[in-house]
Amino acid sequence: MLVTYRKMDLINMSRSLRRLPGCLMKSVLFQGHQSRRVLSTPSKWHGLFEPNDLKLAPDIPEFKVLHIQMRGHDFPVLESYAKQVHGMVRVILNLESDSFASPAKSTQVRTFHPKSVNVNHKFDLQTFIRTVAVDNVPTTLVPIILQLVQKNCPEAVEVSLKEPEPEEEEFRYVPDYSVLELQARKDFIASGKLKKK
Image (tube, rainbow, N blue to C red; front, side, top):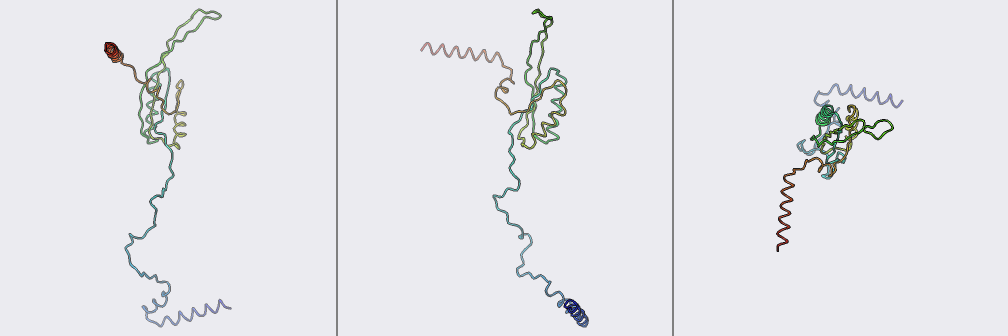
């Protein structure tokens, strides 16, 4: 009964409003729904307050440098694969990278006659090393790099992913024997002068 009474009131009110002029009727109908601005300020000043120390993205730890080291005995295959890995890291993962070669290691392999100590064959086996150095690698990308490298690895190529070591950096450079000889002479002369005093 209460609901029908309200409906009747609304019907009577709308009939009585029809007799009012249009502008007055709009002001009566929308009086409670109008938004009033007490102070007018430009909309560019409205917004959310964000503190200065707020960080939206979490800090992801990074490796400063990560080496993808490839070793193999077949030079053309290794060189091609090193070029492919360098391109994948640079283009697909959008990371800064540099590739370099290390001096080859030679190993002498001997086979013996069955049940004897006599040498059957001698082989000189060269192990070639190529390294792709990737800078500022987020730890979240390391598993992706590892999967990319493993899935595309050709046969007879060993791949390792590690942080750089000082011994590898020293091994990378071939010593200049003339410079070493001059340094030894200089040390010898310096030691001779010290003995004379």
